[in-house]
Image 1 (cartoon, rainbow, N blue to C red):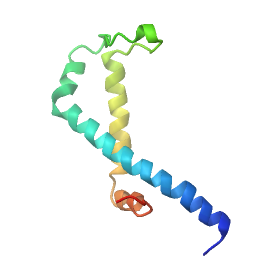
Image 2: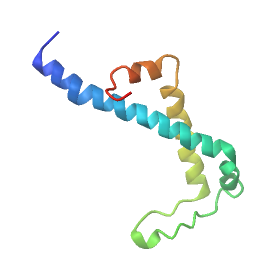
Image 3: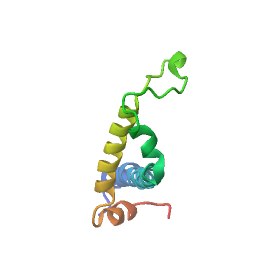
Length: 98
């Protein structure tokens, strides 16, 4: 198949998205390794505590430990999909960079 519209969709849509999905998979795996490596206990110790990162003055929302735990639950849910049987291979095949 050499339809110009389909080729453009593949090269400008599918391939770049596959690259980002592959990178996201690696980033989430790294984040989860750190989380599972012991940092989770710091957040689970006091779920209602605010994360005092000093960013309020920048207009950045203040998070609680529970907010971080909830995001990590979503990270793990997305990881389960991206690491599912055969999924990494499907994502990697269209990638230009190895």
